[in-house]
Image 1 (cartoon, protein in one colour):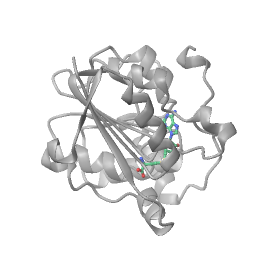
Image 2 (cartoon, protein in one colour):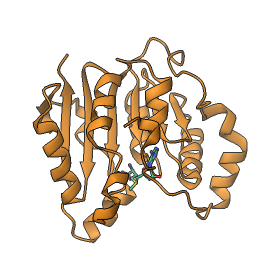
Image 3 (cartoon, rainbow, N blue to C red):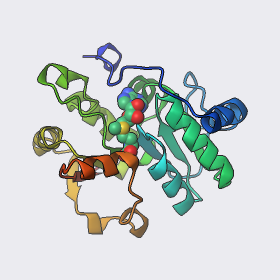
Length: 221
Ligand SMILES: C[S@@+](CC[C@H](N)C(=O)[O-])C[C@H]1O[C@@H](n2cnc3c(N)ncnc32)[C@H](O)[C@@H]1O
């Protein structure tokens, strides 16, 4: 199935936007938001780019951009409230190496990102779509894992976290048959990735006493 033909992994709702988020959207849009119709390769051409898929309120995106000022971090998110929060934070903390994609990451990756592009791709707590009839909306499936593999550089990293056991087991099953990745342990990662800030979704999962799991993959070649 073509990436474009798959069911969307999100349902766009008009969420509440605070006045701070709105101000950030009104004033900072042109500085940080990527044109989703353009290819991404010419932004910061000599860095090892990092992609944060579904960044929520952007806690991880901004942390990583500050920890790695010499690279560029692309955050993808469809909800304006989260984008407003990240824009505001990036501006307040003068973080210039962030760019934001306000659209579905799947077709963008397929069409606008050249192969072997990202040094690392993060996907933390993607929407779990817990009901069985909705599992096909989950962002990660076989095709998507293959797409990530192509867009990550050889030896690049895909870092996935979930608080949903069924999703975790499914991803483990997909990669068990996949010879294009090797599995890393957390201590294999650079130091700044060991103690990432807790996100609001992570806090909610912990409050609900859900177990947090992660899978770290390295593209083999
Ligand atoms: C549960 S939140 C996790 C947020 C964040 N990563 C964290 O750890 O707090 C998942 C986010 O992924 C976003 N999302 C879902 N599908 C997406 C897609 N196809 N492209 C970009 N963002 C997407 C949703 O809007 C949502 O904000």
